[in-house]
Length: 514
Figure 1 (cartoon, rainbow, N blue to C red):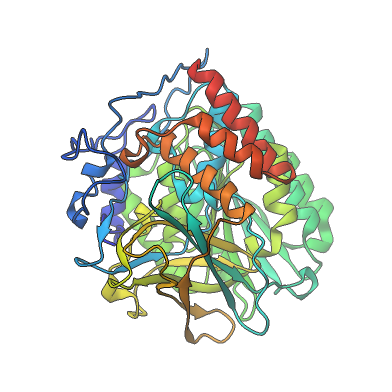
Figure 2 (tube, rainbow, N blue to C red):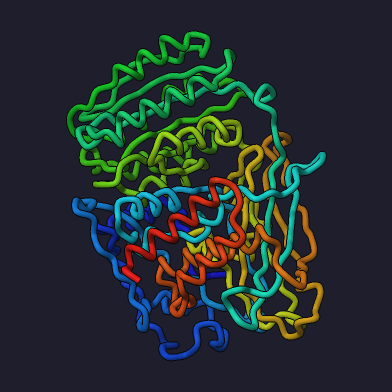
């Protein structure tokens, strides 16, 4: 699928950042839809060049977006468009990079909790879907297990919803590699709020408490300038590490470039073969000092990633927050991006999923689906617009793609129009990746098949996907109903995490006023 090309150079990322404007707007305005007035899922197939057209806003059910009493003053997001339907006669291959980021879900949740709907650009469907770990079985003796299932779509009459899921091998905490961590912490004036620096401190305390004696932590902070406040210190000396965190105070402007550079230099000095090397950036993503040489630091992030020093980013704060920068920095640094909006979210990321957050089991993870033109008329990948990979690059092992940690799950959903509803096999799905343990490239595949009905878990994910599509103002959900989403979510949700989503849908309906 080729709706977009992922920026492959520092220059492209700078252009992307310049293209963003505050308050949830994007300088890239979607083109008007050439399909206006037609049924959203009964359209004839669209060429890949029409991806931007498929992102046209609704006409018949514009969302009401009341702003909170104290609206975020400068929220930066990027509009990546919306994937179109693709005819298998035109292209029967769909290729994309795996994505385990979850930032979009928690940002959406924060907007809802503050009493407003998020900007459409803030909603990335795959990040909402992947916020909910699926119950895929752990692979036995392999890096990944693949699960494929599907059935009639609850939101697209005459269409099938197909799920492709992968599950990474699990690693017990005591078997995790020793970690060499460097915290790079934004202590600039913009972090002087309870939901920012104070939440950063509480979050990092949770992380430090989970570390093993073989792990080390170094700390770099940046305000107007960057400086080292703690050289790499064994986790056995938790009091020293926690004391350094507790003493952090907001100060000055925001020189993110200098802070990151110092953090990577510290990580490089502490490099040890066979250990995990990760820089962990905690920030609101806003930089106002050092921007003139931003090209250099972005190139450096890619260079360090090739040296197995990776960058994960964790965002904090609802006003003056740069989602675009935080997501793309993690992408360049081959790490995870998450948004921390509460202490509970910090616990989920840094306690319940710490091993997966720290230890990567596979890099450059690419997924390719080959649909059989004899049985499939057209298909559409839900989300992953900014994770596109050229079909011909699936087996190009120099192509950058996604990273997956221990125990992580990745889910992708397709809407598919079949030529024969009794057809069993729809094609094949393949996964290709660099095995972090063996340093070898591996590839595995599985037939693409569907069933007579959706499982309960897939019904719930269908509700999440439709919710994301509605809030994203996807052309393909322009006639979508949050009430229908709520009905399906209520009937299929289980567990506190999924019940929280049900409450989000109810709040979204209340915000809209009907």
